[in-house]
Length: 528
Image (tube, one colour):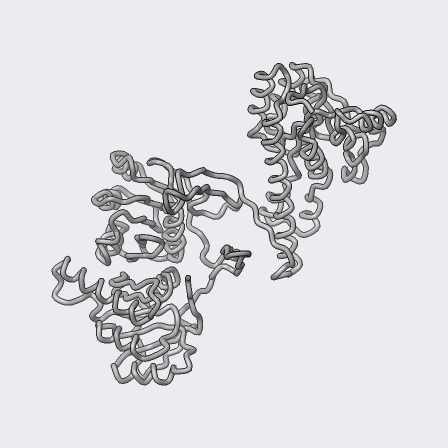
């Protein structure tokens, strides 16, 4: 097996014709014979290039609406034959099989077909068969055959040919073979995942996911960890599809935290101007206001210490006054549906601040899967798309919450959904005033959130902690009255929680004894 293989014959069969003519002309100019099929052959021929139809090679026409055209020994033999094997060479000579040195294939647009909402039958028709078969054959024989499956690699191929006098090197073919198998794997993953959903199979025997490299990173959560960012091909607004206007590349932790912030602010798509500030994937301040600037100020006042070096997410396009306020402290990332010229001008002086725009907000009720790796396997679950309205609330105490308290309770509930468990969120007048996250004890979360409010009262020179007269949300039930009574001691006057504890009666009695109003949602929002 030689390292360099000269290209004499190429088979081109592409669904996406982008840059096809440029590639065809470049190959023909280097003396490479072009074989092609259907629309690819027509496009090349109409541009004046000499093209040989695969049907002429095989002696069989395309048939069955194009389902059968390359599934033939003269195609697969030309791709799979070992050029240095005497037996293979003899078989090629006996059966008139010509060697194919280069395969250029991109597949039927199955993912795009599904993404635009095509029906079952149309999706099935867009499952490519001949393409993956040829790709796998050519990639297996990468000792002799170069396989190109991505348009982005056309230029790399031509550079390789120029550097090697019309030949490709073994390392180049190995890289292209790996990319080829990754493409067919991703394609099959898309087909199998779609079909599982289409036939209503919630837990198929085998699951596969695939991604496309978006960015390599300096490191992961810590400097000794390698990391990269992959996208899944969906067009949902978020950190993966956002446009970055300025600042250095996002880090692993930036992406994780920005995603957390944007997912939370998307809960308030139709609400008043809303700001979310996140630190280490937990919200440290969430607030609404008459303007974005006011919302940011109120969110910042929930926990000014944690907001330093945090992520800011907004439910409206960023404006100049809000940008001025945000620029007042060190902020890692700002993500919003848009940004006006005044805001961009403000941030232009902050070279290390990343500004991302998304042209929309995500749908918190959209279906999706959440994957988590564990030792030896994966946990897969539905995305938490749970949503509560006023009509879903059940008043369980003697005192019912007021209308204003219900507004704050629902606000607190939306925030608690995005706080690491055990989650406790105090809210007053449409702004968080204390957040307790990630504690092993719900009582500890309640105390920590109240202490943070007390600390901010000192910073802001308030006459009383902002938890006085607040409402409180708990992501899961209070197993004992102690956490509830701790919230009451902090000044909370109304409570929202799922209910469902064997001690609900004790907790309700404690709430009545403390003069609290309490509602049950019947829905839990654990986030581990």
